[in-house]
Image 1: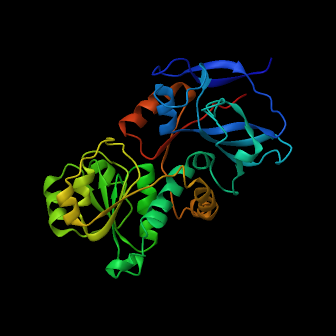
Image 2: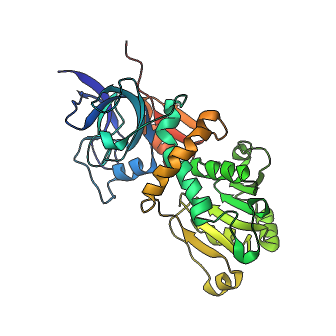
Image 3: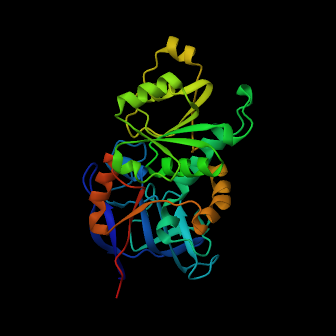
Length: 331
């Protein structure tokens, strides 16, 4: 029996462990991939907690996203670098937290030359979500009711600008000529913001009060959620938009309806499940920006044994960008 190392979840809410397991064999319409980087995603953490609607049979190999090199396939060339995503990976079948994984051919995407494996494993969700939030939902540069016709007239407030999605929103908005205010947790995160972005410290009450009085923003793209979402909406001028992408600061929001109506700011959701086809089309157009370095994504690397720590940092919101598990080099 040929074996491999894999990170498996043995119990709900229990830290995963590294096991020696049988290496999978591909079937018809499937490809065997040697994993080079496996993403640690919020969905992975949610599933492993046991409260999600989908519960894999225990023990299972986690990992809903990844990137690797084709070993055996009928539809792709050996050596192709591919993105692994979809098809039940990490949900209904063993995922990417392993040295090798078998995936359906139709859920693999060949990546362009020059794409680092760590980026190939992690870019899809933050980059496509940012693009949808800014353009499809937030209508950046298309705010016709207020007389705004170009992105250079827009002031975009990004809630959680140092996170993976927030960083992508910030960079894309700057690229489109918008003025950007980035909400971050502390000075350390502020230092990671691109040049030209005005940092707003989340706990700076004086700065927040001034923004509420001046209302400089035309568009809020918020990955934080929580009780502060209503306060950040008050930084947006009348007729503006507030796009909600995430809720890392909390899932509950209370709106004072009379004052919300008075503020005249539209609160818009981003549903990426419904927009999956659009996201895949966007990925093809946006990948060259990553390869060229025009847009960058921060990634932290962890060994298989460090998977529990990666999940802990993810849950605490202390990652600088995204996390990947990297298999050790085999002799």
